[in-house]
Amino acid sequence: MASAVELRTDFSAKELRRLAAANANESRRLLSLAAVLDGMNRTEAARIGGMDRSSLRDWVQRFSEHGPSGLKSHWSKGKSSRLSAE
View 1: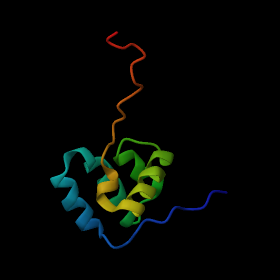
View 2: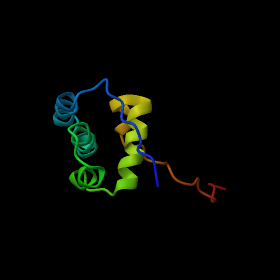
View 3: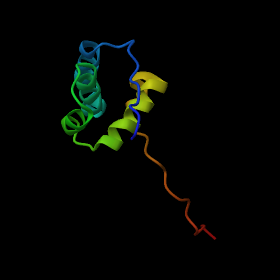
């Protein structure tokens, strides 16, 4: 059986909701984390954010390591071009 991932507690559910209102890109993730802090099970909390439990687990880990800034999307630049100007 899998063990639960711990969510840092230096932010309250109310604070996460306030941050969600200010940061549209991270709002789904913040609202899911706030639901976890309110005692909702992980499956239901993940549904709030439109993700599955494993994605929520990943966001919990990023939040625990980096705080709210860890919830920002980081887009890869992709592979570099194999063609050159030459």
